[in-house]
Image (tube, rainbow, N blue to C red; front, side, top):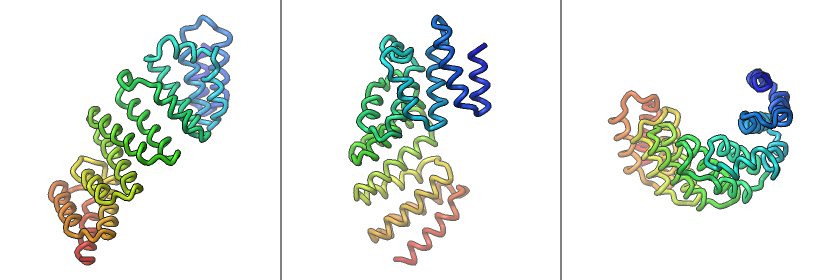
Length: 244
């Protein structure tokens, strides 16, 4: 009964009340099988409110329900989701080494593909914010592999796009162009195709690689003539010819 009160409060957007209700269940019903679940849901409610210190305190207490569960059953999906929330809290508080350590404690072999992708994505964000672009690039390689193993076209495009952005930041423009071109060979969402096309043009102009960029766009138009990004591809191709 208490659990469903918390659920109703959460679904109603009253995250503060939901968090308090969930925590009260762990206190008032110490034998309940729902204790781990409600702790993670309380942390989720704190995350919705951006209450990162409170979230960290909830999950990091050495005598807490969560920490005991993490020690006894680290492969539990609820424990993994809680660790992800804790890593997010540390990231939000600029504790990049702490966030990386929490993410490193997760075993990717036991995570579902979607959760594993979220883990790798957060690690990418952490490394980029910490000023470690090479490590961020390595994380994007992992992102691409996870998305492809899961046969998720949307995440695959997102992963390659992130990789291209890091390559560009590292000054590796030809490699970045190749990554953006890869997106045009995939069944990617239209907005991601548009973004890739514009970046290919921008980098090609900077490197005076008119021919290579033009061929890439022509192949894209031949393969996906009905793509929502076809108009942008045609316009960009014309601009490249004009620049040439």
